[in-house]
Length: 312
Image 1 (spheres, rainbow, N blue to C red):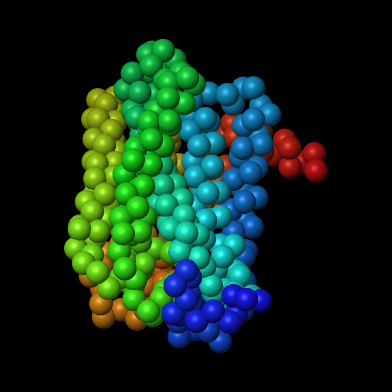
Image 2: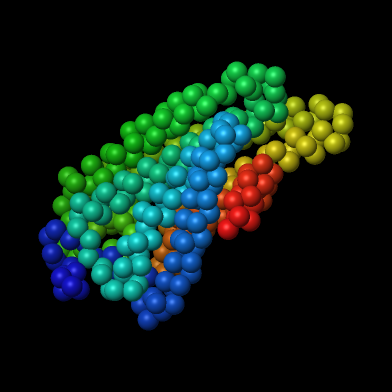
């Protein structure tokens, strides 16, 4: 109950206000929040369980799907529990350390998610353009190493964000108009010079998202070129069908992220609660839809999930 009595001037605490302007509707907003979160956990844990149990699914593509499921669980879990505490219990206080930790975890998992999508694009490129070398080029061990590289990259780029913030003085008014500790939202609370921090955040976003999108575009450019060289329309369809799920996940992952990032930095005319809702949906909807997409579009995974659910 102490969190209810915190004042914005508390030197060790920030105040997360939820969705300003919609405080009266917080309880109603919490319903889709909790539903999306539960569906996300159920779907992603189901994917992890089925792939773990079925030896026939212990292949690079399904290992990548499991990695994606783990990042989806991490993304939604980084923000939803605290958001629900705000909506249900009005527990708005969060320590500076907890706030920076949440920021680090959220952005690290997001960067890792992007790295996995790049690896998936490379997986599809090898499967379509060099199918005879697929088993030798993409082994489970190599996929695990690529995942580790993606994690190390994410940590190295994201860790300076909270570390840089610790050197800045914060104003007496420590109110964060958000449901979670976003980097830009926390940065705006500082009374010091935040120029370098803002530039670094932009550079990191450009390097990670920009380079990953270019690599994905390159992979699919090579895939399209290889497919167009195939004379059989049936082969065309079969090759493109193997990419459908991945393309859908890319669209629902990057499109809302880029839109949210642009509106947050340059859309000053947009109402604050719209910014916040868009940011929340960006971290809620993709983790919920990704396991559904792969469950529907990937026949082997769909059949195995059906086997276990029908038993129940």
